[in-house]
Amino acid sequence: MKTIAVSIVTPDGQVFDGEAEMVIAKAQSGELGILPGHVAMVAPLAIGSVRIKNKNETEYVAVSGGFLEVQPKKVTILAQSAERAEDIDVDRALRAKQRAEERLKQAKQEHIDFKRAELALKRAINRIEVANMVRK
Ligand code: ATP
Image (cartoon, rainbow, N blue to C red; front, top):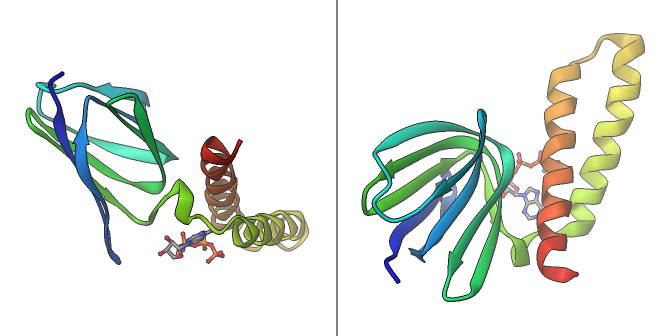
């Protein structure tokens, strides 16, 4: 089967570098499925999972927003942060989720940064969900 090169890069370095028969990512406009030969494009990403399918195996990566660039032979994801499912510290994500939920409760009374807490909550929930994709 034809494949497309996939690279996921963050400010801390490269998180994934490999080949895929298909890449599924969560753009802000909705889920995108990319096959080899896809038309060139750039799309902003949502907080979500990237699924990289190759030879009946799927690699799951949690991504906290950024950009996806497609060229016919290469998909590049530039992410604010990204972790492979097996590298996710679930306890840390659970603690982050709890902290964010507490901040959101306070935010209603004190008008502290609601949006920031909401994004932290989304990142934590996404990490927990992506970790569960391989641990079920
Ligand atoms: P926390 O409050 O736990 O730091 P956060 O959502 O604020 O969570 P980020 O700012 O998105 O964290 O990420 C900071 C760095 O820590 C990034 O390199 C990211 O990949 C890593 N990271 C964050 N949470 C986890 C986790 N649960 N497991 C593994 N790496 C994580």
